[in-house]
Length: 217
Image 1 (cartoon, helix red, strand yellow):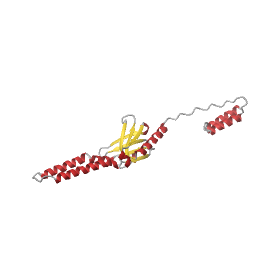
Image 2 (image 1 turned 45 degrees about the horizontal axis):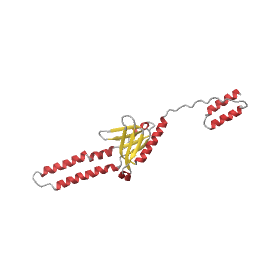
Image 3 (image 1 turned 135 degrees about the horizontal axis):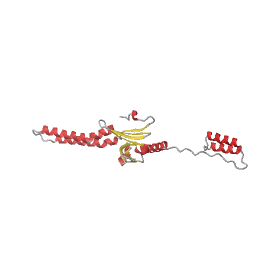
Image 4 (image 1 turned 30 degrees about the horizontal axis):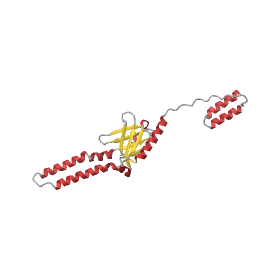
């Protein structure tokens, strides 16, 4: 399952698209093995008496019910979850029949960090923690692949997004130069040329100031 491109905005880019790390399957696989081993042992040592058929059916039903209640839910959560980072937001989606989606705009992310246990560090997995104001507050995403790289990417995108959305403050107009005694028009034009070269004046401002000097001279 991949993130539908139709859900992206017109100028939005898909940066990271991840499934949960395979390490998330270790526990449900072990629990599944224990359930069916216990079922096999119970059936093997079941006393042979007239109601043993019903007892066997009950044991199998209990084992299947426990499997569906715990490990199967973990398998489905792993198979249907996706963690997505775009140029504008962080998205987490999960579920097949009943879907759950959570989105955090990058400009709302106030802190991003990761945690790795010993075993997680060995396999390249970890948890990502995002903090933001509003309804979500602190969100933890477990079993993220390469969480350090994901954290760095989200931080860089957040800073870039804030710079892009910051209001642009117009530069104050440069006042026309005042000539002191003994200063020629050529000297003032040379000063304006230096300001243009340094980026203080645009080409239009330079030409306007130059025209004023020539008119006053």
